[in-house]
Length: 153
Image 1 (tube, rainbow, N blue to C red):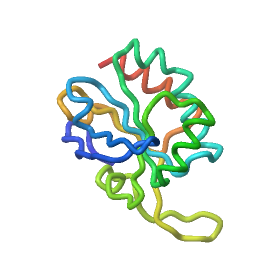
Image 2 (cartoon, rainbow, N blue to C red; image 1 turned 90 degrees about the horizontal axis):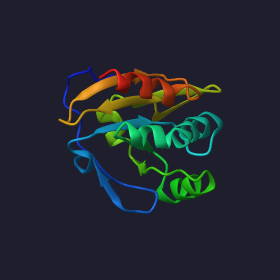
Image 3 (cartoon, rainbow, N blue to C red; image 1 turned 120 degrees about the horizontal axis):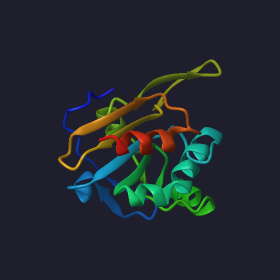
Image 4 (cartoon, rainbow, N blue to C red; image 1 turned 90 degrees about the vertical axis):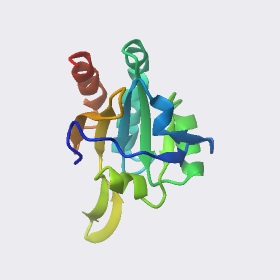
């Protein structure tokens, strides 16, 4: 995990529409950068829908949200459309950005070892520093946890 107070790694990635989204796009505001393993799987869907369901609260708090996975753009587009997700989902197919955020590496599932994205989240502050960091989050309660923590900043 990146430490609170460190500079958040820059990124420029395609979103579900193929448009480039960069960390610089959020200069001067808070942005949640959440990493999730795979679009349209149970935990990832729960987490994404929780952000969606709390979208107005995030907007009222002045906080943007972006999700990052190693899914291709087409998969993200279908996922965002199916669940009416109002925030960008970014395609990091090679895992380079997730690795820069200490959110990519070797995983084991059902006896198989592979590289993939870890379910971690960072809140980047208006000056580009990491202000909150969450490792191995609970997809169901995570959006509310972030909102509570951001309100205390």
